[in-house]
Image (tube, rainbow, N blue to C red):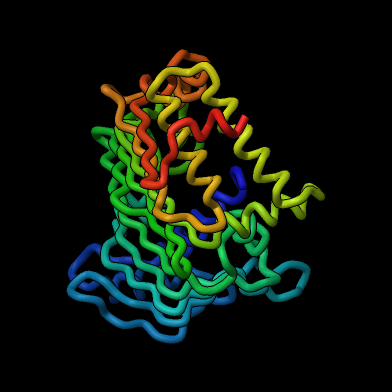
Length: 299
């Protein structure tokens, strides 16, 4: 699920984002500044409507792959309703929108599309999902605030909020420079069926049983917590309890990172070798069904 899966999710939201407001009339700016640059064969919609003073709505959006060797592109993403509430039009023209606020309702990936395998790898259902993206980047202070990045499919929900320092760019090599630091982050994972689907997919791909994959996942959590300090052990117990309950999870798992001072990405990996990594990076994991010693029992 690594980079390609993350890129797929980002691609959906960016494709949905490539249409937005920021001036007196967002719909007019979209029609005048953005629409002429889009290839009609790769980005299509049935209706465009105004949204407030600065926004607009696109209905029945279809994002397709590029045509190759004379063959037409095929649909990769469908969005029933795309609401663009806010967008940095001027920055978008330079391929680096500094802020955006977008809601995509009824996102669906075709079964034979390029992103279908990535969706399954995430454990997401192929049924329509809703997504929210709200972020703001200040190039002067180099602070990126992701106020809301959320995907909801049925009763499954993945939500992320974070603040990053020393973000020199949103695109290109500098976007994920090793100097980028985490000021704070909060991830909420409300699992009802997605973890079951993910484990079953891993089992099928590795030719193992579902139970074997489940044990492996718990074993890795136990290994990461073995011999570590109290805060790391408590976080591991929460995650292990959540994974143990993957068939019938009781509540969402929440991971919060709030260090005493911003932690560079490079420090995150180095912290794993310290006596209490969670203490160093300010990690807290909460799951109302946590059982003390759950990680140790998984060994």
